[in-house]
Every structure is written in structure tokens, then in C-alpha cells.
Length: 430
Image (cartoon, rainbow, N blue to C red; front, side):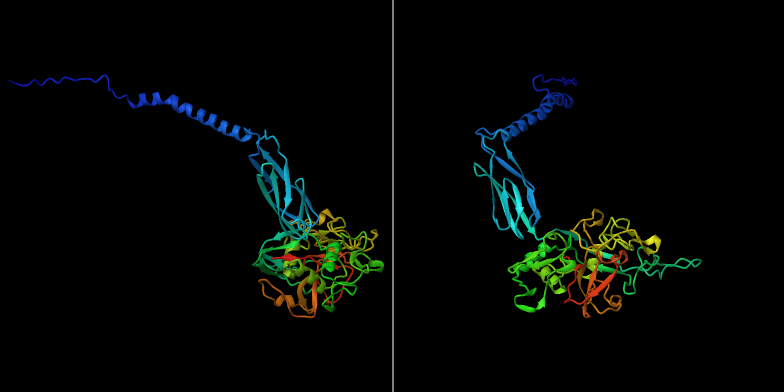
């Protein structure tokens, strides 16, 4: 008997597998509900965090968590206590080193150089901390790099009718017109500083220097207790009484001049202070890079770089400077009696690095020696430092100088054992 070729299709109505599209449609309601569940869960978590069941503190946050202050400076630490419904959100503030920094209700006062940890503690003993570092004075960072040091003599500028030279203005030395008022020992060249450093924002003040003298046990002679020959400072008096004086038991600033630049300080005295502070005096190259504030090939590091006028710095006001007027010019109507002013007196004196009074007020001791010749031209172009000669360099000009002597490239020299009423200093840190 032949088998039939007719096939019978049997459909299983109980185990029919749905098509993918149907499966997708059936799952969609669950998928749509997932974000809602997540939102409900997260809301519950936030509610638990912001509303403690027993009313206790669960979290303390502090802002900032690190502080850099200068001696005498004050700053508030903002504290946030969670949850919002905590029964008692009060905090107890303590300092690990009250001799460095003290704290009162979150306000920190810097006392002395060093580090301290400020701790905020809740009633249920939760804590958070802020680390405080106290410096003797404010500093700003100066980046390593290359810059044109000195002033242009214009030797690479082609004469009229002569084909342009290969020298690039602003890049190559002497490729711009000669700087009015420049002197022979301001040789221009590209110099490279290989290390970042920090330099004091302001000149060291009488108050800051008097503290150093007293901590070092310097007596009426102005010399170190262990070296009566090496004089650090001399008393100010007479018509230039803007510095410090010995009061039978200690050194003090002349009243009213606490915040003026420290004066009558020898190079040895400036060097000793810098080392006591943990730093050093700047080299001429470090000083000039800082003074220029990123403005190369111009006389000054403030304003447009081309002028120094009476509203910008403390110099002999009868003799301002304008590059386009040939440099120094005279304003005979100005009445001027040279004297120092408090640091930062001129808002226009701050450069792009944040440094004040790099031009005028007082000249500033540098680390380099100088024999009075054009010795700088022969120094290395990388991290130059001159250590030959009997004099030490000073930079920046002062209230006793015309503006042309306050240019970034201008150099002066003084015997290191001498002290003047218009010479102070800054400190650098590597």
C-alpha cells in the first residue's frame, strides 16, 4: 500500500513562540518604568541623606580644604553640615598648631610661618579638615623659559633704503629701534631660565624685616650676634627716617612706616633675611624676567610697556618717560620730594604676573656680583649668574631716580656693605 504524500500541519496553540516585534511590545511598559523606579530610589537615597532619622549629623564638607595665607592674614572656611534636618549642626573648631594658625568659628588667622591642620568636629564626632600653610609674605609664580634680556641698541634694524635683515623683531636681539636712555652694559640677548620660581609680590617691608632682626638677636650695632663685623641694617634718621630704629631692647619700624619697603639694609642683610625665610635673592635674570611681566623688548613691564608716568609708579615725578618722545622728558610744574611709599600704593604698578613696584619706590638688591664693566655679555645664556667683581647689582630704580633709570633693563651697582635710604629687596623661592 502506497503511503500518502499529503502532509498534515499540526499547530501547537499552547506553545506558540511570539514574533520578536510582539516580544518588544510586551516588554516596553517595563522598560518605560525603569527610569521611574530609579528616580524613586534615588529620591529615597537623597531623602535619607538630607533627613536623618535620628537627627544626627551624617556629613561635613569644608571649602576650601587647603589654604595658603600670609602672616596676619585672615580667611573664613565655609562649612556645610548635612542632613538639613540635623538636630544640632554646631561645630567645634580646633587647630593642630595654634602657634602657626588659630581658628575661631571657622575664621583662620595666620600667626607664623609653618603648617597647621584645622579640624571641624560635629556633636556626634564626625570630622573634616583643612590644611593651612602660612608664609611670611605673598609670592607669585614665574615660569621657566626664554626671554629677551637687556635693551635693544638697534644694531639689527636695517637703515632706510637697505634690504630687511634676517633678524626678527621681538625674537632676535637688537632687532627693534634702540631703547632711549639705555646704557652700554645693558647688552640684549636671549636668556633661558630652566626652573620655575616664586618671587615676593611686594618688596620686603620694615615690619617684616624688624621681626627677622629681633628673632635673630640682632642688637643696636645692626650686626648678627655671632658676627659683629657683618652689618645687616642701619638705623634710619634725619630727612630719610622711613626705615627702622633700635629702641634699647628691639628693632621697630619708624611709626607710620611699617608697611613701607625695608631700607638701610645692606646686601648682606638682604641675603640673610632671604635665607632665613627659606629662599634667596633673585639673580639679575630672574629679577628682570619677573619685572617684564611677559612684556619683552619694551622699557617697562606695566601698562603699554612704552611709558612710565606719575600715576604708575613712585619715581622722580618731574622726569617721566615715553619711548615715542625719545625717552625721558621734563614736567617742570611737578613738585616732588623723593620718599618711599607703602608697598602697592600704585594700582597701575602691578604687572601681568601680579608683582607690584618693580619700577621705582626702592631699588632692589640682586644676587649677582658686578665689576662695573659690560660683563653680562660674556655670561652663559642659560641661568646666568655673575660671580666676579666687588659690587652687587641693584635693579628697578627708586623714588630718587628719573623714570629712565627705572626701566626693566637698567642696572646699577653698590658695595654690599653699604646701606641706603632707597634700596630694598625681594625674595625668591625655587
